[in-house]
Amino acid sequence: MNENFNSLKKELTQLKHRSRIKDIFFVILIIVIYFLSKQNSFRYDKIIRVQGIVVEDANGKERILIGAPIPYAKNRARTDTTKIKETWGKRFGEKYMNWYREYNHEANGMVILDENGWDKVIVGDPAPDPIIGKRIGNSTGIIINDKTGLERTGYGILDVNGSDRVVLGLDNGNGTEGATLSLMPDGTTGLNLNSDNQTIFIGKAAKGNWNSPDKEEFHGIIIRDVEKGEKIITQEN
Image (cartoon, one colour):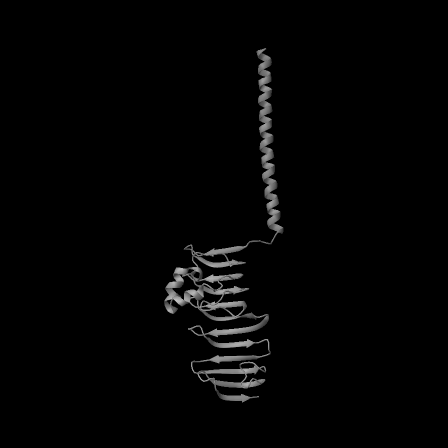
């Protein structure tokens, strides 16, 4: 009796041992299949699908925002009401904060922030509004700002009521346009140069365009007095 029991016990032990080996083999097989499938995925699937990417510097500050739209960043000064009040609110007073609430701060594309969180380089469609005013239409292009987030230069297409304007602009430190090279929907093509006292237009102004001195089609150079709006010099053809 004891002999039969011991024999049966020995066989059960062997069966358990074989079962464990099978289980271990099965688990290893699953792991191998999993990693093989991952390798094939890495080898053949070259598309990464994400909604947004945030790149931080060595100090943990957000420095590059990529997305559609760009992700929220706590370090971004543009969307920090306290920082806006301390900079632009002090400069323009309480009325500025009323304007600020109407601005579009979003972008589909990429925004590079400086160490203080101000937007420095923007590539977007559309791009956000300037920090001191709303655009007259959606802008697609590249924008470069100064250390306070003020737009200083940009190149892009501006959609105004369904018509495209192609514009390259260089702005003054107060946010006004210093030099603008533009192609307008009405056929106007030219360079505008602005100073405190005079404006200069060089190029072709279509009939009815504000650059034309007499609202007729114009080819040439015109210099105007800023305050009076009067012609100083007109040279055609």
